[in-house]
Image: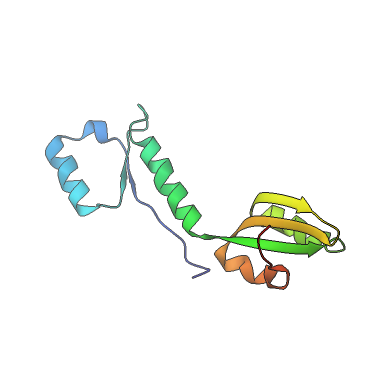
Length: 114
C-alpha cells in the first residue's frame, strides 16, 4: 500500500522500570523496540528493526536505460540506492533498489541483470 505510514513503537527509559513492569510492557507490545537512549542500550536492535522494515519496502530492479534518457538514470539515483552501474554501447545498465510503490515509473527500462 503506497500511502501506508509504517509505525514502529519504541519504549524508552527502560532503565527506570522495574523488571515486573518491563516484562508486562514487553508482553503487551512484543514487536516494540526497548531502548535506553542515555546508555545506548537497545539502539542496535532498533536500527536493525528499522533497516529490516525499510528494506522490505524496496524492490531490486535491473534497468537498461538509453543514453538519451539521462533523466531516468537521475531519477533512479534520486529515488533509490544504485547497487551497480555499467555502461555499454546502448546505454546505462543499473541495478537499483527502488521503493516498491515507485517501480512502475521504470517499467519501460526493466531488463535482465548484468
